Image (cartoon, rainbow, N blue to C red; front, side):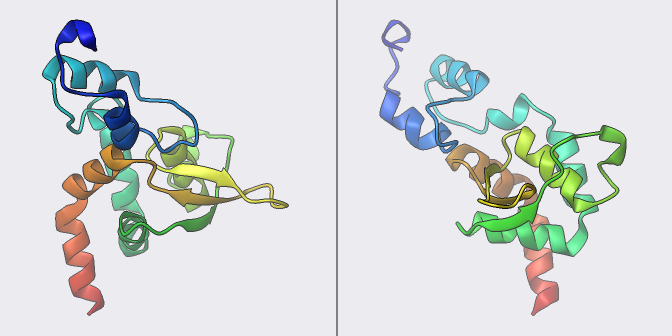
Length: 147
């Protein structure tokens, strides 16, 4: 980072990118942030953003409410099918939560004593801001329909 003459620091990267209970930063986000000298929603540009949007759209009102719940800083307990078979993604929510976990859209921590139940949370600011940005219209629509 010193060679790039950036004001970005390791601590700022930790705040923006970390959240996976390890010191792991998304490489594409790090390279882009340093080259642009700012944090932005780079994570979504490197992965299956269309697939994520399709899965969340497919999940309907319940899925959007789950996303709203996660974006509010809460956690969810969900069953996840660990063996991803892409042809099965739209068969049951256990499959798409598994994909969302494997793409780092959510952080999944296994529950003690249960082989398939995980606590899910949004892992960091970057993913949180990305989801808010891309789903704001749908989130507002779902909130309006519930009232």
